[in-house]
Image (cartoon, rainbow, N blue to C red):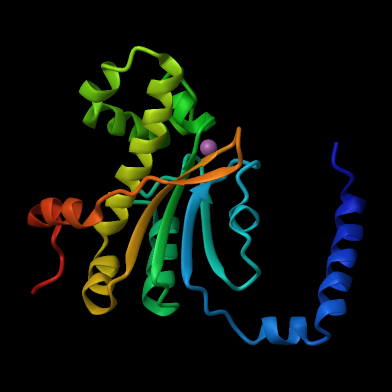
Amino acid sequence: MVDIERVFENNKKWIKSKLDLDPNYFKELAKGQNPELLYIGCADSRVTAEELMGCEPGEVFVHRNVANMVVSTDLNCQSVIEYAVQHLEVNHVIVCGHYGCGGVQAAMQSADLGLLNPWLRNIRDVYRTHASELNAITNEDKRYKRLVELNVQEQCINVIKTAVVQKAYRSRGIRVHGWVFDLETGKLIDLKIDFQSILDKIMEIYRLENN
Ligand code: CO
């Protein structure tokens, strides 16, 4: 069990470590934020956003939920995107999934998970969209890993579908990236999703901006 007292002791040590390097560290931090990145990742306790990217406070705007989903009716995630893209003017949006994702695994099983059912339904929809590719993978572990990757790709598409991202793409060329974190090696894998071609294909239907 985590000793809560230890958390506060750690906080004191952390403050000291920052002030030892720069006595004005917190004064500067309090002035405001100007992050370049918006990171949307899984709430999984093992997949830390800043730590795995080596980012310092102020460098990355973070949103985490079960299985790194970007759902159009989720006011929480949509507000994060709107705020980060329109007001903070981030230049990169990252959707980061991870192998070993319990949310994705749960969506592949036929179990009643209560409140999580409608949330995981979105992942089942990803499976349905890519069913022929996924069903052709006989190895269950490989199929599950592929679903993790395809889920990241679909959530990136959901990011691109938002009006604020389409606007920022036209005005300043904002980039959307799909990554997977491999828990077994600690590696961050860029799925190198070809967004330009995906964008061209989906714009016919999802275009929200006038030329
Ligand atoms: Co997860």
